[in-house]
Amino acid sequence: MLTEELTAFIASSPFICGHNIIDHDKVYLEKWMGPEKLSDFQFIDTLFLSALLFPEKPYHSLVKDDKLDPENLNNPYTDATKARDLYYDEVEQFRQTDPLLQQIYVKLLGDSAYFKSFFAFVQPSASGVSAEQLIRTYFQGQCCENKALAAYANEDPVALAYTLALITCNSRESITPPWILHRFPNVERYLFQLRSDPCLPGCAYCNQSFDAVKGLWEFFGFPSFREFDGIPLQEQAVGAARDERIRADCYVLFNEDDLGKHFILLNQTKIDLHEISEIWKAVKTMTRERDSISNSALEIARKAGWNDQIETACMYQHVCQEH
Image (cartoon, rainbow, N blue to C red; front, top):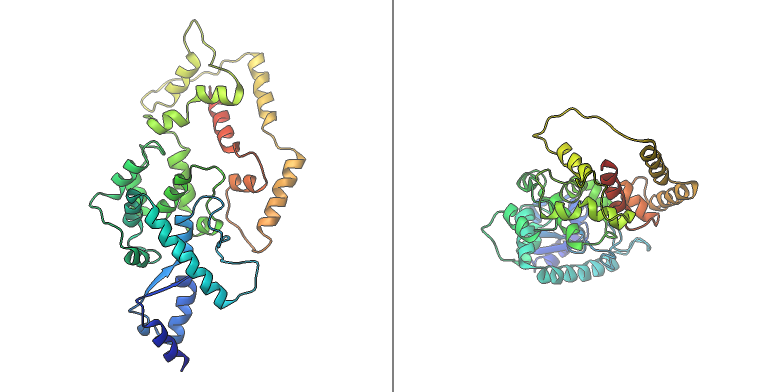
C-alpha cells in the first residue's frame, strides 16, 4: 500500500530531488519499489550541486560538509524542507552565474549522473565550442595557459569542474570540502597544476603570479636581486636552469655569509611546539565526528588558524631560495 501511495505521490513530476539522493535514497527506493518503477524519473542531487555552485566560504548556510544539519537528530520532514530550500537557492545561483561559466559546467558535467538531471530542469543554453576553449576564454589570466585542459576534461571532467569552481572564488579562505577531495582526488592535482605549477614557456598568469622580484619585495622587503657588474646573474641562472633546451654543468658557488643566511632562513621555517599543538587540535576537531578525513597539509594549517598567506609565502620563499 505504501509503495502505491508513494508512486502516486511522485507521479506528478518527472524530477525527484534530495540531498545525497543518488547514492543513498535512490538505492533504497529501488530495493523497495523496484528499479522499473523509478526508471522514468530524473534524480537531482543537491549535495553535488552545493559544492559546485557555492564554493566560496562561508559556502551555503544549510550545508556543513556533506550534511544538511549535522547538529540535530535525523528528521525526514526537516531534511526534505531544507533540501527543497537548498535546491531553490541552487537554481537561482546557477541562473545568476555567467553564461560562459554555465556552458563550461554543462560541457564538463552534462553526462554525469549527478548533474544531467539538473541541467534538464534549468535548460541552460548550449554551445558548439569545446570545453577547453570555453575554459581558456573564461579563465584567461586566472590559471596557467599551458596546461593540458583537454586531457583533464577527458580524464576527470567532474574533478575539473570542481577545480574551476574553486578558482572562481579568488579567496584563499575557501577550500574544497573534504568529501569532494575524497571522492574526486584529482581536484587537488588539477588545482596545483593550474595555479601553483609555473610553466616553462611562461604565460600571463604564471609570469604575474610567480614573479620572483615581486615576491622578494612583498615578503622580504628587497626591491631586487643582487647584480654583478650591472647584470642580474642570479635571475639569469634560474631562467637557464628552467629551460629544458639548455644542457650545462652546474657548480655551486657560495661564501660564508650566504651560507649563514641560508641556515637562518631554514630555521625560520621550522614550527615550534605551540604550532604543533595547534595542528594537533585542528586534527582532533576535524575527526570528532568521523573516523577519517581527506585534507591537504595547507587545509589543515588553515583549520589550525595559521596565516591566510601561508601558501603564497611558502611559494615565494621557495622561488627566492632558488635565486
